[in-house]
Amino acid sequence: MPETATYWTKPIAEAVDTHLRAFVDDVAAARLGVPPNLADALRYALLGGGKRVRPVLAWCACEAVGGNGTDALPAGAAVELVHAFSLVHDDLPALDDDELRRGKPTLHKHAGEPMAVLAGDQLLTLAFGALGEPAAGGRAIDATTHRRLVAELVAGTTGMIVGQTMDMGLDTPPGDDELARLEAVHRGKTGALIRAACRMGAIAGGVANDAPDPRLEAVSRYADAVGLQFQVVDDLLDATATTEQLGKAAGKDADAGKTTYPAILGIVGSRALARDLAQRATDALSDLGPEADPLRRLSRELADRSA
Amino acid sequence: MPETATYWTKPIAEAVDTHLRAFVDDVAAARLGVPPNLADALRYALLGGGKRVRPVLAWCACEAVGGNGTDALPAGAAVELVHAFSLVHDDLPALDDDELRRGKPTLHKHAGEPMAVLAGDQLLTLAFGALGEPAAGGRAIDATTHRRLVAELVAGTTGMIVGQTMDMGLDTPPGDDELARLEAVHRGKTGALIRAACRMGAIAGGVANDAPDPRLEAVSRYADAVGLQFQVVDDLLDATATTEQLGKAAGKDADAGKTTYPAILGIVGSRALARDLAQRATDALSDLGPEADPLRRLSRELADRSA
Image (cartoon, rainbow over all chains, first blue to last red; front, side, top):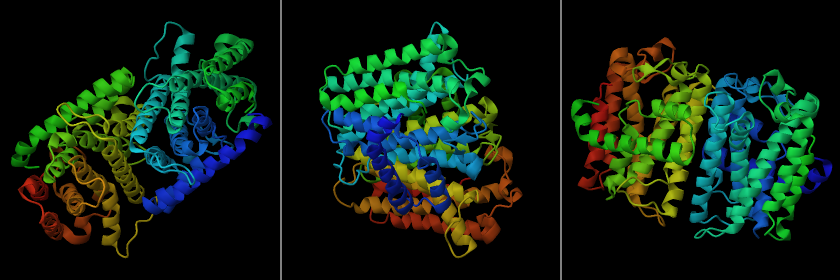
């Protein structure tokens, strides 16, 4: 994200980091008995930087429905734990075989493959534990809301794994043409967890538990547009940025002969699609007031990000 | 388990299989969109036989506190999904590198390593989804009970992963001597999930949500004894049974130079320990009435099992 974006989301990302660090120390290690080396592997995968896009989305979605962003920290932490698990497992030699992540060796290069498999499993398990742990200064989560958050996290994580099986060619994405199939892959691989982040933020922010809430539908439509936008921009960056700018290997998609948006639509067409998706994201929020401005700003800035 | 045990637990195991099969078809595939090849991998890992020891324990613990065993099916299914995930990942080349499981090729031999990693992740994710899905004929699970079940599953799964990191030599088990360290490994690797199964069964069966319930403590003590007993018997079988009897490689522990109960205590000493643990399990239930007889019977029969 550009500096302006970093500037205003930085306090949120810092609150997320503080919450995640306390969760690993006080819950995972102290209460659940995660031993030192495994805990270090969790910290390495979880606390090594990253822009916390998903928890920031959860925070802003929470505020968009009138909640207090702090109440979205458990949901944001859970989604970030799932995101971290997915990076660790996707980087494994058996899957994407990546050696570099956020400018550092991937966990299996750092701590070995057995630890990477187990730490990924542990991160995923802890994601469900994080849903029950309120942040300092946040509201306790009532049982009904907790139950909804669990269901959303199951759906989001499943969508993500499904997207990865399709991206790996293990299952066939639905769709009549190359663009539809590419979209199906990304709706899973990137979109499902972004959708979960936004919906979980709104649920933590107090959308109705006992009736359909149009604000939750608005946030879901927003999330679907932003999730796809995020992937289009990712493909654009992979095609145009350097490894140094990204902190991970660039040009890898083309090298691997993978279908990407630039490969199908070209650079200019992909940029136009990213801006169109940003517009769709904004349109989805038309019935929400100024409390949804941070969500609107995020989708604009995600379209312009350079890393 | 001997034939007599198989006889009386068989209807429970069949109810578990029916519930798990419906869960994969109706929830994972139909509702959550798990595509065909991934769903097949889940079924291969989950429905390929097995005695369903953990769901049977959950069922009997539910009845031991006066509940209806059917109400423990969601908890039992969740624990079995975690068990299945752990077998798939533990069998991976990076971990135990096993090629045979329940007399069949392990999932990574059958469907490839990428699918095995992803299917394991999916099984673990679905375990948390299973907690919210009542069985046909079972009670709906109230939100407070659901929340407790999630917390128990997080604790049990974490304990299991921790035990595996210790067993792999990635973390150091606590304890002053070899026997204490071996016990620490197994309290995690096998015990934690058996404890979760029993506690979750009792919670689903209606132990108090708002105050400590001595019946839950009794079931927990029972579970701790049975969990260790289970591992002692496993070690004994590995040392004395054939590969054909076990449906997985026998003598593997000794070949790998692993510490086992027979290696420390000898065959006779290990058998005595197994019987002592069965007694401890029975003693833990002394304040419970005849509704706990199935739990008592299970621990007696686990001590005598031959596969």
